[in-house]
Length: 380
Image (cartoon, rainbow, N blue to C red; front, side):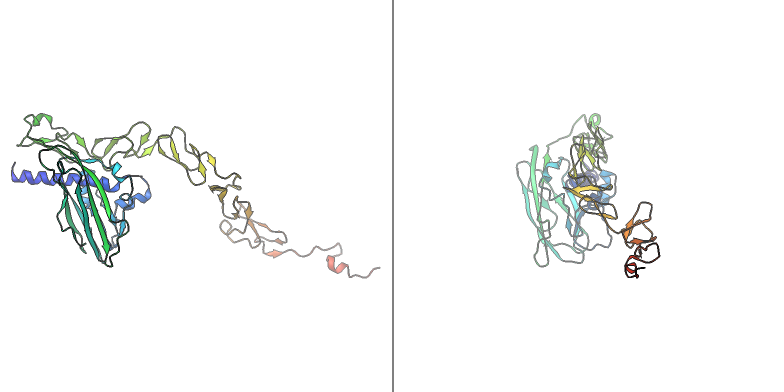
């Protein structure tokens, strides 16, 4: 193998792992608006601790230029702290040997310690190494470092390894969410030249002069047979082409993250898995058809908890049974009354006028004298 070919191969291997670890940093994936924060850097003026895989590297395998953050502006991604984190991670293929990360401290001072670089089965995989010292200060400006995953030699198999990273402030206080504890699985396979390489390379892979398949972007494996999806397909979906998931019956979405419900979810519920609804507050049942409010909410109020309603403007009480002054639907507020749907005021007793701001006078008798003065008139 020529030096140029070897360099290109190593670069491809390094970039290939970027997608795998990018998935590991962002799974389990639940698609909602808050998740976007961890995938895309939000504020160019943020100047705090950050750790990420850069957008150019991610684009090579995902087709989307974005940064993948483990730590963003001093906050650790909650996906990494998920206790079930390791269950969602794929096996890192044998072709992948290292990954590059970028980090910076910004205007503050942070100190790091890689306190764990361990392989569970050193017969298959040697302990991971890093291209920087295991302890030191996080650089102020963005700098890159590599995590190297060396296989032991001619032994094939899958070995688990773990990486631990503690980051502390200048005063020695750990950053919330650290130390990070990441467990991954790495495949090691002893593969030699294949005389039939030129016939076996799939998906436009090229058999090089050493009779080993060189894979195009988006594919991995001995014969380039494995497509890469970012993030990995969920709910039993299969990655059939780079970035394309084939979903099983009952699921939909780019990553098969959404469910298909035969019957519509009610009361604002959302279909999250096959025939399973995620209900809004105050509702339950397979289709969110039951309300937790034993006493129904009045005046189109919405149940928000056990016997607690969210009322429309102008109403209050646990069941929206109490009226009060309304300032949002009438152009001018009703002083002593309640604003009606037609934007007019219904006045309280003793008040009248367009804005219920005039007090009613005491009722007068037929002689035009009020009841109080009539009692004082002399008898005829």
